[in-house]
Length: 166
Image 1 (cartoon, rainbow, N blue to C red):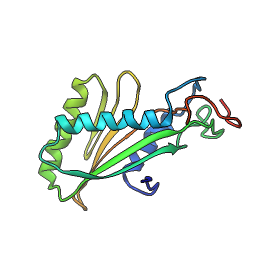
Image 2: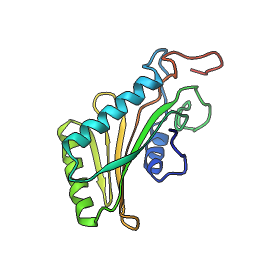
Image 3: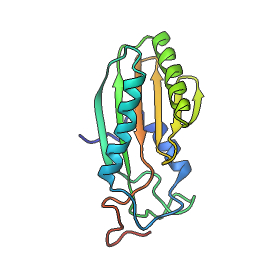
Image 4: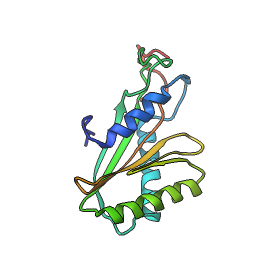
């Protein structure tokens, strides 16, 4: 499956990754597929610990997002690196259950030494030590929670391809 770029789950991810950019472009990284597996591992371990009776489904995954993988803060100059992104959705979630889930999620991530922010119907975290971005957003009008994650910028195959601009 590929992740639709128009999905609300990517709004928070895009904002976070655009702010971070890929200022440094290392010569070697893990592969995009390995990054996808690592992001999914973070989300699966999170759901194992903090499900709150909610059922998440609709896995959307992509290992080719170019969002934020640019040189410097200008947002231009695509390096050739990509981000791995995964999202899950829980439907028919009442506001009180969503609030409990977001609170528990923030506590869980904080206890794992992640850098956590919480504003209203959103909780986000940067993982420690690899700085992947995890987020959950509640959409009360649809009674949905979107749980998502994104890797930092990585080379598709672990090293630059011809034509990439490290």
